[in-house]
Image 1 (cartoon, rainbow, N blue to C red):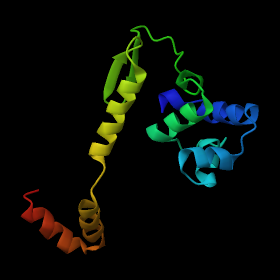
Image 2: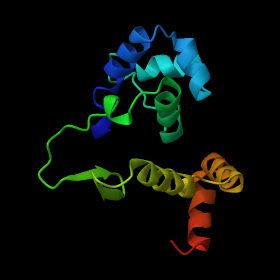
Image 3: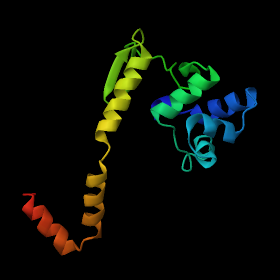
Image 4: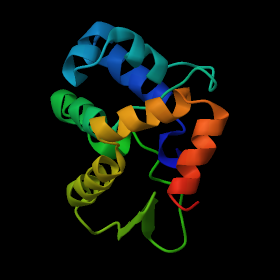
Length: 138
């Protein structure tokens, strides 16, 4: 979460400046108020971070540039912005890169069928799990 180190403070400042409540931001992003509260948590152990679509919702609906919410000014020597599994130069269109990142995240999400198989596997006895793994050749 390198680019979100000060996001909690920046979001709180944005809300206060714009006279927005937690509920207002939650409505913008389609999440519950508690989730927005966790984005602003001062305790890092209780803090969570918005997804790409939620981050873009905040930016678009408050007309706030993305770089005002993210830690983009770290002065790296290569002129590259690094996101997990993604690298692009500062001159590239950030929205294109964010869309690519979101596609990659969606690709990695499990389908309902895969989730159900995982739930059943986790509920199985140790012996049954071992047998399933043997069947799979692992």
